[in-house]
Image (tube, rainbow, N blue to C red; front, side, top):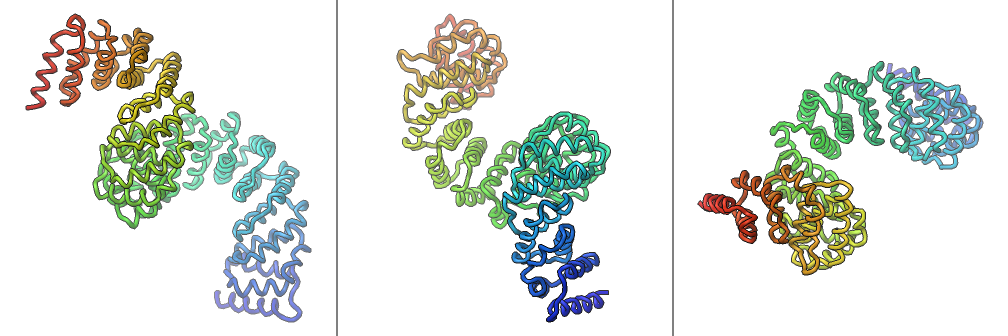
Length: 597
């Protein structure tokens, strides 16, 4: 009973603090006994007793390694892990006898140090790694997995040779591996950046199908696959789906978030019914989620290709609009949530956007380049005009660290500002142009098209050498693989910036005339109109292209707004009568009248 245990505890304490004291080995047995009984000991009283009876724990060195490990295990069982002096005493004893330890005892000590928040020196961890290699072959897979896991928890970079040896040894003993150890080992490999061989993964996946896994293990295992971007065999993914479905009711939000994030990152084709059940589980437990959970789940839903119902998205929006909730989000979390909502075709209301701007603007200095680019992209997709102060804060941060932005981030920012009709300062535009000159060879064709278009929407003239670099890189990309939509955007941007003697757009059209003729039918109405206008203004329209573009434009004339119709009509008027049929002008004028009416 509790009363008897309490009396026993007081009796033991009196012996510890008596003049004669007790031997260290007796103290170990005493604490072990309380640990076996599951009795928690009051920390302050017992730590004083330890220090009095062990002369500041120096006597622990005299214990055998198995006794030291037993003492450490017992301390964690009875809740005595808060005194750093006791922890350091154990560390000194461990360091003095580490060469005598077996793997199980060593794991126990490392776990105890982690609980006590005692930092284990890297040189000692290296000795532990050597000792592990010496006795690993005689150990079960559980001890091996646990050691690698403990190394990761102490932030020790395990030597590549050790990792390979562990992989090979576990592979030879795969039939012994249980669900928890499998998950911990793969999680540890992912943290260390170690990609197992295909043969190892094949045996592991076969073993996985024979096990019963708990939610925590399911989440760690699939997270490791996502982190390392490992190939996922359909049979493995289907087995994982089944186990997730089976364990979903008892799954906490951390596990759900990790699993959904991993599915999204791996690009898995998650069954619709499982997606819906995970979304429903998220809906029921939304208020239990922390900021990171919500961010990961929203991003994963946007990536998985299935759209949750409007009710769930509305619920998330209302939940996050609360200042108490949204204030707990980091810049990363905020940008992820807004990006996800836009990807899921949900445009948040004004209440959410005001809370978002207030919170993101307050911590924009901590935002990463991708966070800022995603936020500007989201504003542009929504056609939302944010507060001027928010945009100023965003671009002050951009100006300070523009060199840390990726080419895609810069392209997205320029495109977003063009869509929002936001005027970028001349000083920052100069920085963007210098960036493009320096890193032009790293821009993708899509990045080039967005960047050039973004420059056309600003009043400042683009330096000729920037245009030339982008133009040359466009040719390299198009020669390698022709992309119709990107070609149209590049030609249009170059037509806007056309200079005498530098008719780059016309050169591109002439160079890729055959490719565009073969793929022009794939263009949207909007892109067809852009190409039509560009070719007209560049004075390089051909009969074949004109005929095909006119067909697309006439078929989709009803989808253009008034300004687009007028631009197309102006381009048609600039063409020779032999090239452009009168029927196009008639169709455009009729549609203009209808739009005006």
